[in-house]
Image (cartoon, rainbow, N blue to C red; front, side, top):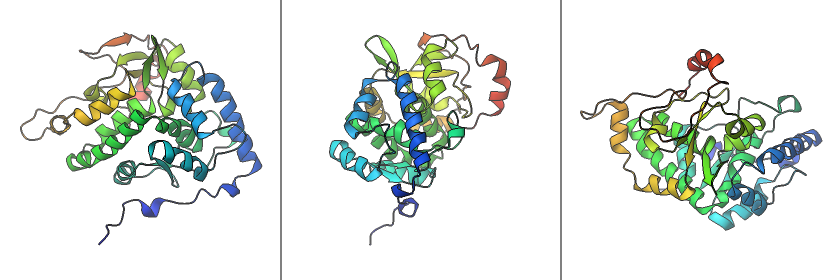
Length: 294
């Protein structure tokens, strides 16, 4: 008997023919202005992915066409959904090398901010890097790791790891820092702020540090974690036994429950690449502390 997947009922058709002329115009505006910001600031693997998948400003991409190219490169494909999916379905999709993506696009009145991820974030932000084998392999391992996180009820910690890497991560490239996170790639303002503005801390990536650091979703980040390479992410995901950390997070089996970190402050043991001024954050810190989500 074949077990029914946890997400089959969530997958829908993109209905590409339903996009309006205004939808394609919005995509063009978003695409062109974002590329001006990204070209000097984002890692080369992302730009190579855009080219390999044939993304252009001319029209909203068809997922079927993108999937043909993406599957041929790394075996991944887009799974079209109506929006965010719950943890188990998300992890199961990644285990099956399917990345969930919404298909709606924001309006011209929402160019700078949209609370729920749209096609600009899900497709433009995430999918190009899935052409990179090390990045794609890490995403696969992340999905497999979700099973253990569900077992220990520590999915929020794994979600934080995703936030500080796949959504808002920076990477070292030829003596400079570049962005690779999808939340940065799809944000006009934060793509400049994360590197150009001196407010935020830049901290060497540490797996446990990321998993203990809380996040909020409604403003620029007070810190960013910097990886050495996508291979580093993959190797840590494969070679790390997460169970002791999960027991520490939950205080299980005699383990002392470890403290959680606020994202604003540097911690003992951090390898600091840049200590930020926090000038952007400090005036609104109390408000942001109250909005911490996971």
